[in-house]
Every structure is written in C-alpha cells, then in structure tokens.
Length: 98
Image (cartoon, rainbow, N blue to C red; front, top):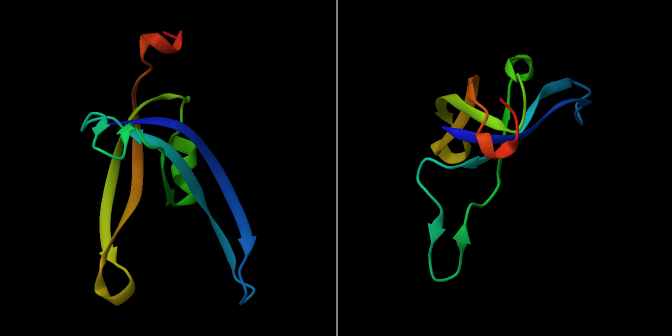
C-alpha cells in the first residue's frame, strides 16, 4: 500500500525520434513505516514510471493505492521494478475527504 501524492502523463520524442509515453507516479511507501535511522527520519517521496494507461486508473490524489509490480531485467541484468497497474483503496480521513 502506498500514499499516492501525484500522477503525471508524459509524451516526448527521444533522440532516435521515437515517441515515448508513460505516467510518472510520486508516492510514499507507508507500509513499512517511517525511517528511523541515524541520518534520516520519516517518509521519503519516491518516484517511478508506469505505462501511460496506468494514469487512467488514478481516481483521486492524494489517496491510498495498491500497486501491481513486475520485475524485469535492467542494466547488467539487475532487476528493475515496473508498475503495471494500481487500484484505489481509500482516502485517509486526515486529508479531509470521504
């Protein structure tokens, strides 16, 4: 479960002239609780990209969502996480919405 703070569509042509489209998601990973380390405390905002169609699943923000993830090979075979979908769960009462 994450607290989705913002979602943004993007569309541009890369250096090879190919159209690149997707969604950028800004969120807080609240399931593990806040960090309480020597050099950091609290929740750090995270950013990840997702396919363009994920944007259409955003019902409201900020709100709690479950994210669907997929791993794929990245640079040098290291795993890279990709968001494949999201589902609205609720809007916390402290945000002043029902």
